[in-house]
Image 1: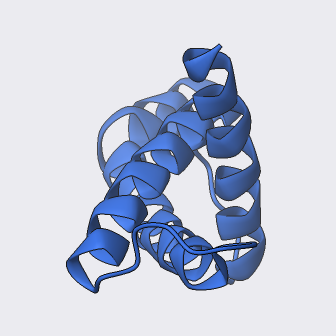
Image 2: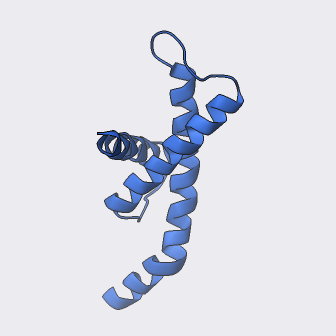
Length: 94
């Protein structure tokens, strides 16, 4: 069940990150989900580094760290995607 939640959280975080980044992102949805999963992992690690491990109620600060990490990872990942696979796909279409 842990993997299912990781995929769901990654999907949601990836979509939120895509909404927050200005412009169009070209990475496919499956890659955005992976970037969102990585953002959740990195955000949790950063939150632990700041001393936010577990609080009563909703961990808003941990979620903010996850969203910020997801935005950074989706942005950088989309740049790398376009630098490698994306250019080849655009050349094949033309």
